[in-house]
Structure formats: structure tokens, C-alpha cells
Length: 130
Image (cartoon, rainbow, N blue to C red; front, side):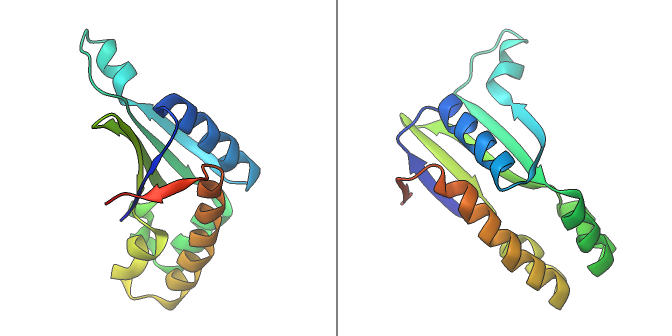
């Protein structure tokens, strides 16, 4: 799992990621705002948001390589607050598709890893969390 901290609050981190997702270009399939959902129920929780990211042409390639792998798309970026810091976490595409033991998925995972590296570059400087 890739996890790193950024020197931005969660909302600004999500905004930068959303812009980068469109720029690469990928699709922001869903944006789940955990703290907003909790607030609608009268609860207060630390910032916690999930971005689900993918693109139809990649999805078709996943399905063609191994239909079972469809359960693992879209890929997810988790942005959350803990211990006064903003964290970004994601299971890498290589990690997500490795269990299938499929050369086509492995190739796609490598391509997707480069795409997500470009997305995360929008947050530089960032540092690996310990």
C-alpha cells in the first residue's frame, strides 16, 4: 500500500487530486465524502474521503483480460486526517491486479501505475508515511 502525507488539508488535497485526475485524463467515477455523510446524521468525524478513479477504455481491457478482475475497478484513493496530518493512501494497481496472475493485467497495472504517479505528482512535495 502506498501511503504518504501532504502539507495540505483534506479538502485542498482532494481538489488538487480531482484536477490532476481530469488532466491525465482519467475519470472521477465517485467521490465519497465520509465526514459530510456523517454530518448529515449529526455526527462529527475526522476528514475522510475516497476518490474512485478509472476510465472506460481501461475497464474494457480489464474485462477482456480477466472478467473476475472487474470487482477491483475503479481504483481508489483514500484521503484522510489522522494525528493532525493529511494522509493519502492507495493500493497500487500492481498490488490490486497481482492476485490474478495474468500477463495482460500485469501490463495494464504497470501502465496504470504511471498514470497514478502523475496524479500524485500534483501533490509534491509529499513524503512516504512511516
